[in-house]
Image 1 (cartoon, rainbow, N blue to C red):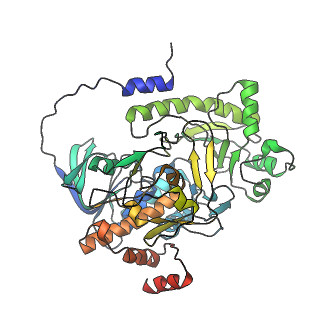
Image 2: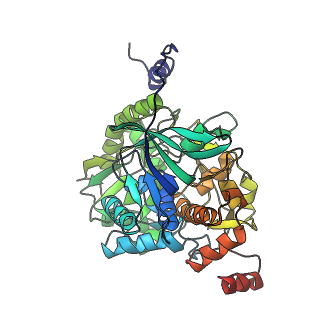
Length: 488
């Protein structure tokens, strides 16, 4: 009898808990840095670039063979634009997009009624350009290396223990920035963490995949030209007129087509919405429709089963697209993303826990280090649906949410910062993570230069440096803004 995904997953997780005693050993110190960044995704990339700007020795440790993280799996970069159409993420994240544009590997920031803004990027170019920028900045990058533990002196982190083909080693840093997305460093250092909603349920991951041979003009016009009363092609929160004005786009919806395919062909599609993202190459689209509930992105066995299950879902999704969605008649499969797109795992408990009320109330913080506008977007853990709530404008991300409780010399940037489950659903997108990363890198630099813990730096000085380097920050009134610009 074939076991279900969850039964197989549980069997792997519930293996016997016997243990062996490893012999004590001396662990060699492989390197020492002023700032050590762990994780090379969107937050880690900008953290390392910001920390290295004026001569500090910066190291970046990444478990994969490339940098860029979720920017390499076929997703557009969301979050550069606010709900009023203004650009709210600038600074180093914008410089990265500008470098991609030189290679024709990034689009403009396009307004989107659902996502506020979308920026299309070419995944392979992201890997190359990110590494170029890090190398030019003097950042020492180490690939194929996992964080297996931490080096602690009391409540102060001094570095990490790594595991790689080279064996076990230690890498030290005066300040450590955790950009793993899963709070791997913080968790191992003893920072209290939370997972998921009140029931422990986490947003399900997706394995992105790519199709070529799609007639994207036929696809968009099939929506744009539909009369208002023809609801089959209506897309979630995105009016049909949008598709008449944009050659590159995201489609979210076509719910009735999925229901028809399920009824007529008996297809198993684990998502109630069709999610199609046009690529930068003609005829290329990325599909964001696989969905594996119950995956814990911090457990290897669970991730493995998630990959297995997600791949079994692709065939039926492709069959649906080719047979029911206009423009896909001659489409063919080309590739899958290099890893599951994880939406949620651990969140640290920091000096301040950002909440849903902060997001929906467009809250200002005196220690704000980034501005975001992406809605609360939760792929619900227990069903095939999604919750979306907009605030109407922008909200601040406070520096205190990047500073973990109980552990010194550590900063966390990215989706693992100190938030509730609901607030994390808003701040988790890539442009916002890049902005947090830049702030973390500059905070680490101030910490090292001033010989004080990250929790004790002058946040006003951090804000001045961010503004001086082109980052966008809100102030409560125009007079405050003028003073900060003058100080910068």
